[in-house]
Length: 457
Image 1 (tube, rainbow, N blue to C red):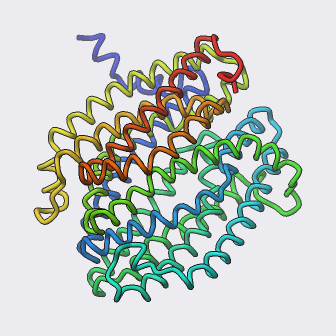
Image 2 (cartoon, rainbow, N blue to C red):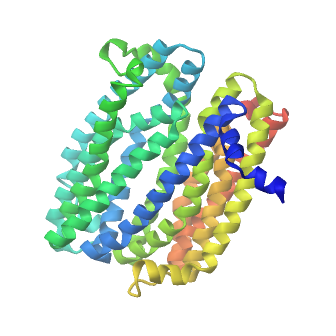
């Protein structure tokens, strides 16, 4: 008994966060901070759903979700520079080359600003001919308002597209908790403003778009100014440090990240559009309630995973395989515990839904079941994907993602027509299992030292 009491004494807690490998200590501290931050974030995230539905009703909320998903496709134009920066920045800082790190930061900001600026101008031109009411399967009387809403959402997205790099830099420097704090601030401000709108105005999609798009931008702008004039001043983007010749370093790795990211965006964002076209906008809301519910175990597991991407990058650069193997074992044990929690969430889902969003919206058990499976499979894939992404060995993942992206949409449509809304997420699970097989196989080969040829690329 005394030994147990001692093991949980204040001294043990202090030692837990202060004794050990420096990289492991960083991970522990960030995980602890992320638990606090993400715990509040999940509460805010879940509160946003019923509040927003009450403000604009379920159908309009479904319209908003689908439009936001479509606009997010512009993330394709990142071309992988964000993830390329994440790895190259960590490598440069680990080697003490802070000038090179600043060059990577400045060059990435410059390239992404030029890309999204051109894309936004192109969107303004094309938007004149788009019938958003038809695209979103919305009432025709909303056509004019939806056209304006699309411009507003895309404008805010374009600004966020560039300034969200501050979160990438914080994470690359093994401070993901700070990046999580920025996301929390944006969500919390959005919730507060929507509550205010509920009491001052009738439901309005335009105002919803301004709030949901504008608040993250406001937080990112303020935080960028703050960090780049304080702790990260030596990495502050500057025209003098823009070196397009270094874009190759970012692009060689980044283009592979881009293709992988693009296939994932296609798979996850088209589900809303498929459901809107097959079953109507109200069903998009039902689907997203289940998705947000099971984002809890994904977010929970992500808290443990997030510090490890850049930590794996640093450990690989220093050939510390023992640390990598120990960390992977720990992450797999946490995956088992998180999977058990997900199963429990499936069992208690029905009463939780009623308490959360009320009696007016019913989420079928089949949708709940397959969404839970999706969470379990997604977490498993992420264990090995984060390891491979961190060490830059992503060629197998690239090929697998291309095949997955090609199969995802037709499978989701076919199963959606045959099985209803649950078929869409079932299709997603099927293609993710395919991708997970190859990612896992490559990860094990590298960890065991048996990888060669394509398996080491």
